[in-house]
Length: 479
Ligand code: SIN
Image 1 (cartoon, rainbow, N blue to C red):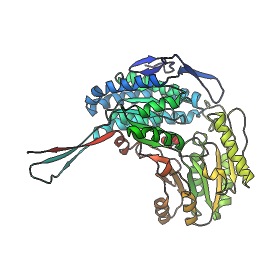
Image 2 (cartoon, rainbow, N blue to C red; image 1 turned 90 degrees about the vertical axis):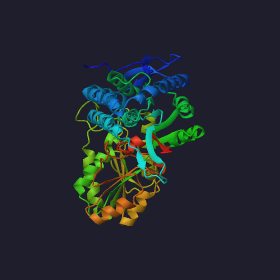
Image 3 (spheres, rainbow, N blue to C red; image 1 turned 135 degrees about the horizontal axis):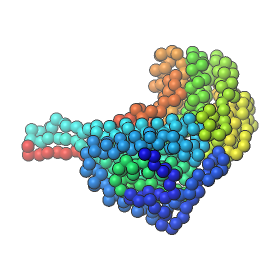
Image 4 (tube, protein in one colour; image 1 turned 30 degrees about the vertical axis):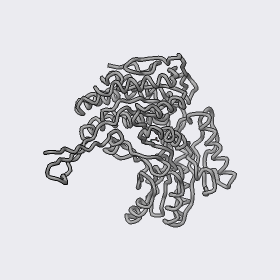
């Protein structure tokens, strides 16, 4: 059975609905400018209704056993995989992600549903040896309650499933606010959740361009017990302040400034391949993309020459062509930022070794900048585009100091064949995730998240369920 995935209504309380004030917005393809769809532009009242529906649906959903919820999640997983091609096509059209990566994202996103369907059965508690003979001490773990999930445009599907699957597995209903750039993939996921048998009110999707208004309701409504957000550090801080009055619990996956270090003893072919994968994934628009390439003096020239050749051979163009590796940027604003970072670097003495210019529309040439130094904007800011700035360093200590010289702490990567150095550097890097001789580290099996201003909490893995569980201590007396 193939379901119709492109919807023009939002999904609240098991019904496909318009905004109360009938407002709508258009979604455009960043590659071509073509109209992808028109969806409801919901406001604060619509969000309040979705939260109320979720609260009403909570008792019945949490009363199911984890095994019963797993059956529903497992059906959702199967439906996502059955609709992999259609979902990837829709995702590429609204986000500008190349089709090979969109197909990969559907598989990656579905894997969270499959993983948490099982992991929900393992929300174990504790039995504590008591301190008196007549008592028994037990710890149980229970779903936290209504969960709000605010997801980003760069992973239109996987960042929803990474939040929603553990919430549902833990017995929590959800209200999802997808980004204004990619609401159609989010609504397609809701079609599949409904078909999988997720009960009315347990799964709600509120589409909107009014992020401030909707975000405020999700933070301030006391019914919402948990907010999970992926996006910029600036917005994460704003949401945290808005959650303070109600002490709504938070998981925040925020910005990054990933160092990618190549030591003199690295396997250079592997390092070049890893740098291309890490830097140019979704055209540089992921939080874990290599942001600064730090290369030791002894291999600087050789690495830069090979890396520049590899960048020059990247194919950009029609995102639906399976051989295309690089698509457009998401918006004019993003394009302007990338252009500004390159201009600033050049003004301060960086050399453009490849690319450096806007092509057409929202396409920016895959770019390599040499002789980059710490005083350039590109050293401190998240690039979020296809620009690879290369820095030169002399010693291991200098590389670590340079790498850690950022307010961010999400992902870091380094290449070395010295086992002792691998342990030393891995332990010294102040980041939540470290790739050692590996440029692609994301998987549903491992904890994803950052330190410092890259956020708090972990998603995926067994830790990913914790975010949606409260711990309750039971003290039995008079035994
Ligand atoms: C992100 O960039 O927000 C997520 C990247 C990933 O899951 O690998």
